[in-house]
Image (cartoon, rainbow, N blue to C red; front, side, top):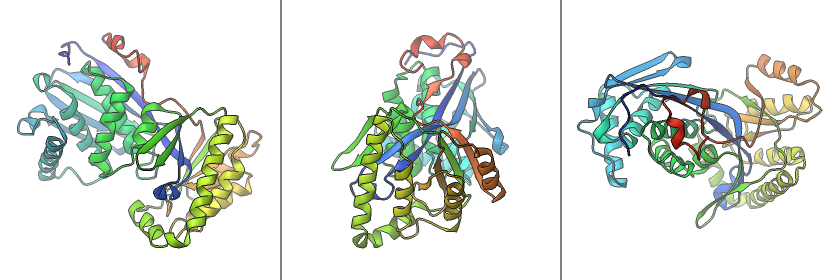
Length: 370
């Protein structure tokens, strides 16, 4: 990697979130799932500083932290999987002594330090100010951590004039996801990196293939505001899996049908409804809040379903092209106490530089990403 010029540089990156259109839970047992990016974004702005400090701000959470780059003097350089684990443990230990790992926002601080240590050359540890904002609800199944990882990776690689190809951003972001989640599937970071719609098959090898959709439905994304534990819900379903073979099989068929309809530019509304009804048969997946959200949406002619593990989290609705009462639906959902993201585009581009915020002629090395 080349040395970074001492002149001021600033890079702003945005990355979409994602939702699962079809295939939840059945994908655990070898059936495909269909994932799409959505036009709700995490945005990360990184400014190079002369002062040797790392400053992190998340204005929406009134969150600020700072440390000196000398924090990493005794942290193992990352050269392979073993040293990566050692470095992560050492950074966590340092932060735990400072009582800095107590919330999702503080975990984002840890990920920033991890990516900084992984990407910024040891010979040129410059200071940075990092400002992060997001439209994604953390822990709701929208790929918020992957979106943040992709944004950090692209921004830091750009500042360091490193390999900022999307393939490399995806690879590094997956490593960040492993740090955050332990054993992620790789779907979230791949979708957030490359964008569009993606078919995922968890077979003997993990196969992810793009789906060139001829139609890109608009979505309502509704947050039930009910916390859920994905591991627990998957475990409940696993305990009953011998009774659910036909349900999993039909969900798999729906996923394939959904792919075919998107490729052909056909409506997927009826499949959304059927997929939700099948998910409702799985133990622990639905609750009174997700059921109420789906009911409200259907009352206004908007087919809806749980997305992700369920048990809370997020519901998606397919907005019909002739939906005349969308504002009334949104009002009803908010009155019921739910958060709403409306008219989200699907299949949007993946992580990218925001052009008007690239300074100091860094755009020359970004031909693949802009």
